[in-house]
Length: 265
Length: 315
Image (cartoon, rainbow over all chains, first blue to last red; front, side, top):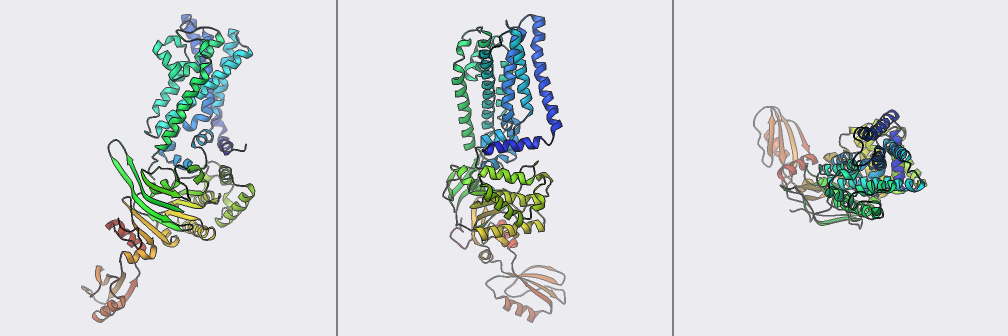
């Protein structure tokens, strides 16, 4: 790769290769967690019949999409993960990034790539495929929608991380809010939005568009309508709303860097 | 090369406001080697960070090589090298050579120029045996040589060094100093150095800027510092007999048994004072000492001196 960012990612991968057992252990952990999470609704449904009218495999599809997206995002997002980035700022490493002829955001995204999340994404994708197959809805068309949903979810998670990182410039603890958005948002998306109040549904569809990234595409694939406004008809809005959300997160980042005050020497 | 006018940085929290740099003015010409010194918390690092584009000034103006650092950060970073003594810019888990290759990629140095430059630096800094070692396995002195090489690989026009000799032993310090001197001499790299080690200043810098409480309190030559602060020479005399000592034109600093330390202000001729000393007392041994630059700076810190041999002195 010609860009310096490829070289940065390559350097991180080389360091990772120095401890392959740790990488394998963590990756296995990620796969197990996704599998267990997918089992939970199946158990719930076998006891209660359905979750807000959704069958077990249908809920599993939501979980799978959310986890695939999250896995994809975290492969590059670890550098701006609130915990990691808080340290980067506190220990003055961000100062050094600013002295390099690179985009600080791209530096952070590429210099801390984390392979274990590839396994989370793969496990998520496996879960999605299983549910689509067992529901008999797998086709090139639905696969494309599901792939778009996973990528959109990844963009959503990255955007929330960028917002959190931008807040870290102001208060080192402010990024807890971003964790709430990304983890909370993805946790929320793992259930059919029917289980939430209509106000929450609107917030998490249009303001924090996690519902648009996960729930609406799955509705489209399952060819069913959700409560209120929600339904496959909203799918065309996804790129627009997500674009605005992502754009705002980049604006917050730029503002954050302007207000960056470094740390003592 | 570098020009600061009324450069000010205030940090404000909800409760208090701290002025770290308070209206600093200076001009640094192409190829100068300037020491930027002051006590802890004086505003040294904050100034350096504004020069590198890390921090945005609250007021005033800073221009480095024709660029406003925080607006043209990426453009400027291609022309500057930075070394923070307490932080590593290298890739910890990877061989030193890989860090250099990454620097090459980040700064877009041509492969041929890179090979040539690396060979030169390897030679100058004796990096040969270290290139294949992971950075984490290097000693502090070895690592600092690596940091310097990485910082100057892209042939920067200006070099900012924040405590580059901190924690190094004498030998490693000497290696770092001779490298920096050579770089400045041979390639005309403008260099700004902050340090607590006044040995660095005396050996490297023709010019020194002293900052305290965010203001420049001295800007001038290192030699000028001794005169400006009128420390005078020191006299150490050993007498044959114990007893009080009093000589016109000298100030007694302290006594220990038969040994006495005196100070001769610049207004007095040392030879006259020594003559009077020899006439009045039975002297076993006598030495004249040039004031140590460290003493001078220590005194300035303590007294917050307000002097200078150029226009930027007063505050």
